[in-house]
Length: 352
Ligand code: 6PG
Image (cartoon, rainbow, N blue to C red; front, top):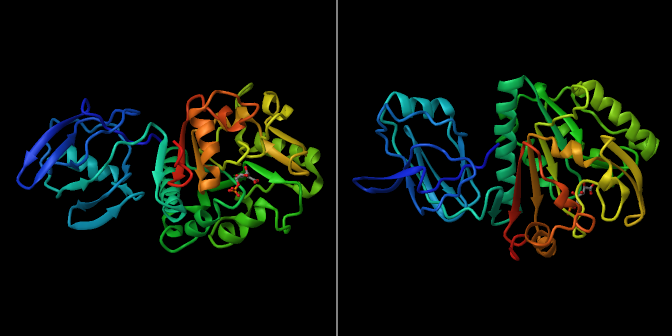
């Protein structure tokens, strides 16, 4: 999933009564949008190519109005505007007046960095991405494989995904759930990442039980890791020497720079043969099971969810500081071909 950015090289000024701004003529992936207002001219000439762009936008600052066809809705910071591709195609190729798509953007701080006001907006933003990524993956490959994150941050996201505003928008029969990591505790233990996801989401949506691949953490970290790795091999059946490629991996960030259960100064950080590791984490005095770096970095999409002022110094160190992955394992997350987005609430991003 590419975060949509525009720059003045990929858009041309348009003027029409009551509207100023820029009309997109192509979507440069990775460039950064720098205008402050954008209007789609509703009368794109038919020779405007239907740019192979994604179909959603993030309102990163301020607010705006989205009018597509007869529907107009107010959008604000952190909102996702999902514009169905067929609408765009109709928009671009049939030269059909459709109304105007008016958004107020501010410069996006950089490819893959999205700041939103608070955890509620972050969760809504992440939920919209989940829905869209699921729709795209299912359309393209008939399935959506996701590795969930643990901890507290994703809890409101999971609750939101189970809500009437989101759950009906996902074909849960095609969603296949895994975990990025797990604590070596039984599934009903309060510390279990499975338990949290099951309570907030999986028990609330019509996902077939066989689509849920819980890590059998109660068996102890080494055995659970071995079993989980076999589960990945059996399910993904990757080519020889390849690694499983998740459609989406959700990640959090610890104040010490860990992500998943990749903790500072541990041998797991350098594990490139195994897909799953199970080990004792001295720092938390807990045994953990975790996907290893190569598997996470093979993902098509990685979404970090980070909120709260306590994370701000670590966010700055990871994203702006020197590269020192043994101290800050989250710096190891640099997908080979996939796309990583850091979804930050304002307080976590305050030191950037
Ligand atoms: C876990 C997570 C871990 C988590 C971070 C952030 O099992 O705890 O996988 O990596 O994402 O520790 O946790 P919070 O979201 O609770 O701050």
